[in-house]
Figure 1 (cartoon, rainbow, N blue to C red):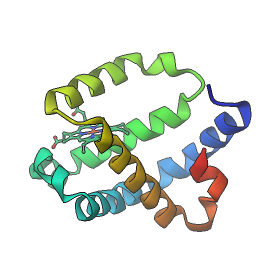
Figure 2 (cartoon, rainbow, N blue to C red; figure 1 turned 30 degrees about the vertical axis):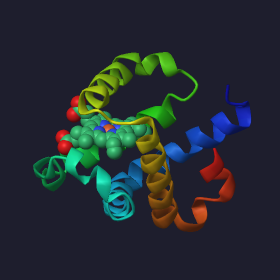
Figure 3 (cartoon, helix red, strand yellow; figure 1 turned 90 degrees about the horizontal axis):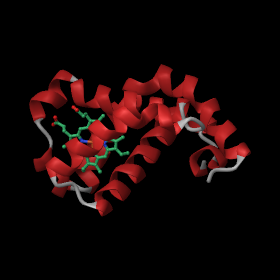
Figure 4 (tube, rainbow, N blue to C red; figure 1 turned 180 degrees about the vertical axis):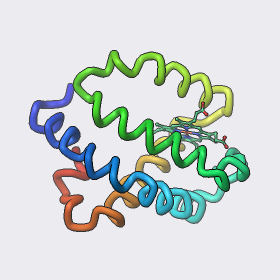
Amino acid sequence: MLDTATVQMIKATVPALQIHANDITSHFYPLLFAQHPEVLPYFNQTNQGKGTQPKALANAVIAYGANIDELGNLSDAVSKIVQKHTALGIFPEQYDAVGSCLLQAIKAVLGDAATDEVIDA
Ligand code: HEM
């Protein structure tokens, strides 16, 4: 269970994430593929080129942030994401790789606004 301060901090990041979503995902994928090249074959490069996959990830992250205190709102979306990722055969440790690269991308784009407290939250 997240404490109130953490919830507030996450919600406060949503406007910045919305403004910089495309920049963050543009940073994220090169980091992921450079640091974890083993995940590259999972990704459809046509979708990468079209920007549909980066946009889907950005929208999901923003929706998590906006609904962090009302997670029930995400049930349908999470169910679809779970089906997609189990069908793809994604392993639990690969979520750590994605999480780490996503935080690095957020830090790179938001700079000083992404304080240690924000990144921890
Ligand atoms: C924070 C956790 C994650 C979130 C929120 C997330 C979100 C999403 C979303 C919203 C989609 C689009 C679903 C659709 O088209 O129906 C997607 C697709 C995908 N995700 Fe994730 N994802 C996460 C973690 C991962 C991980 C750990 C991997 C493996 C490295 C991964 C690999 C993929 C792939 C390969 C696709 C399909 C992309 C394509 O069409 O080429 N995701 N993800």
